[in-house]
Image 1 (cartoon, rainbow, N blue to C red):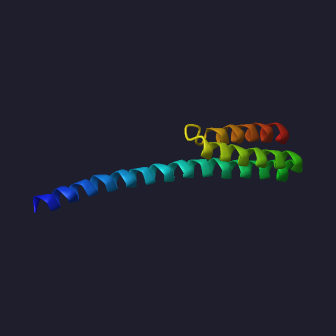
Image 2 (cartoon, rainbow, N blue to C red; image 1 turned 60 degrees about the vertical axis):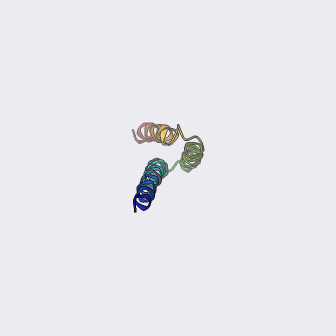
Image 3 (cartoon, rainbow, N blue to C red; image 1 turned 135 degrees about the vertical axis):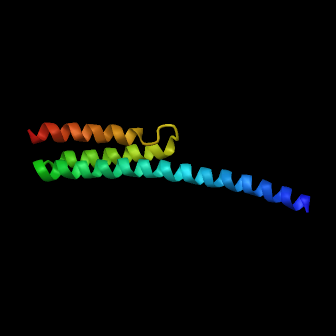
Amino acid sequence: MKMAEAHHDTMTAHDFSDHKNTYEGFLRFSTIGMAWTLGIVVALAIGGTSGRWGICSVIAILSTIATVFGIAVKSWSWKPGALVLVLGLLILLLLSH
C-alpha cells in the first residue's frame, strides 16, 4: 500500500509541474496575441481615420513580425509587439492632429 501511495504522490507532483508549464505557456501566448491584436487595431485606426493605408499596412506587417519574434525568443515575449503598438499609437496621435 505504501508503494502505491508513493507512486501517487510522484504523479501528482509531476502533473502539477505540467499544469504550471501549460498555464505559463497560455499566459505567454495570450499576452503576445493581445499585443498583436492591439497592433492590428491601431493600424486599422490609422488607415480608417487618416486614409493612409500604406502606413496601416506597414504597422500591421511590423506587428506580425514582432509577434513572430516574440514567439521565437522566449525572453522577449510580448515586448516586440508592445514596441510596435507604441509606435503605432504615436503615429496615430501625430496623424490625428
